[in-house]
Length: 320
Image 1 (tube, rainbow, N blue to C red):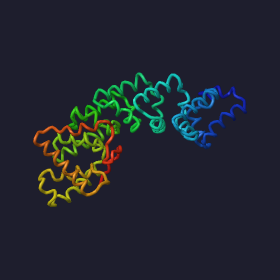
Image 2: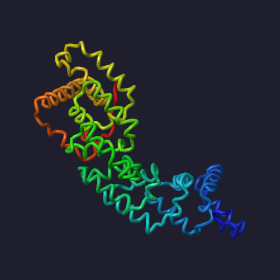
Image 3: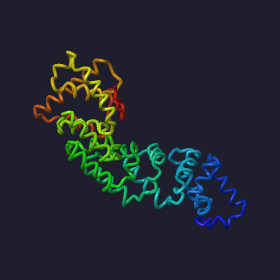
Image 4: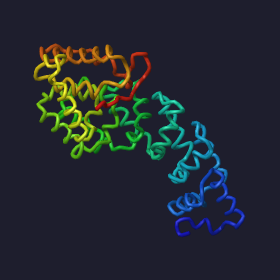
C-alpha cells in the first residue's frame, strides 16, 4: 500500500475487476500474487483503459492473450512504459533494421527488458558500433533476433571489450570481426576472464598459431564458448585418427585438422560431402602456410550460414 496508495481509493468491485483482468490472461493465484508483491503499481496505478491498450499493443506481434499474461507476470514493469514515447519508436527502429513481427515477439519474449531501454542513448549507439566493426546492415536485425540480450549490454563495459579481446588476444583479423560477431553474437555475453581467456590459452597451448586460431574463431565463434572439458574430449577423439593413412600424411597438422573438422562439420551430408569439407580445410591451411590470402570467407557476412540446399542454418553440431 505504501508503494501504491491509489489502491486504497478503489471500491471492492473496482479492485475485483482489476484482479480479474489479470486472471483472465491465464495467471494463477501464485503468479498474480508475486507480480503484485514485486510491483503493486501494476494493479492500481494505471487506468483500465491504459492497461488494455498496452496489452493489445503487445499482442500485435503475434503473442496470445495468455502469452502477454505470462510476460506481465514476469515483467509487470512493462505497464509503466509509454506506447507512444517508448514502444513505437523502438519498434519502428527495429523494423527498419529488418526485424520482422515474429522477430519482435522473440525479442519481447526472451528479453522484455529491451522494451525498457532508451532508444537514442542506448540502442542506436550499439547498432552504430556494429556497423563500424563491419557487420553488414542486412545482418544486424538477424543478430538482434538471434541474441536479444545484446541490446541490454553495456557498449563500453561489455560489448566493446569483447571485440577488442577477439582482435588483440584471439587473433581475429579486423576484416573478419564483423562476420564473426554476426555469426556468433552470443559470445558478446561471455566473461573475458572466466571464459574467453581460458579457451584462448587452451588452444595456444596445443601449439595452434595465433593467426590460425584467429581464422578458426572467425569461422566459428562458438569455439570460444565451449567448456574446456568438451574441447579435451574432441582433442582425444581426433588423436584416434592420427594413425590412419587418410590423415597421417598431413604431419603436424593432423590433430588440428581432425579436431577442426569434427567441431565444425554438421551431422548431415554424405561421406563424399564430408571428404570434400575435410579437403577444403586442408587446402585452406596450405594456403595459410604459404602466405596466400584466402578471401573465400568474405562471401558469408550476412549473419547466416547457407546450407547446401540454400537454406539458412545457424546451427553447428559438435560431433564427438
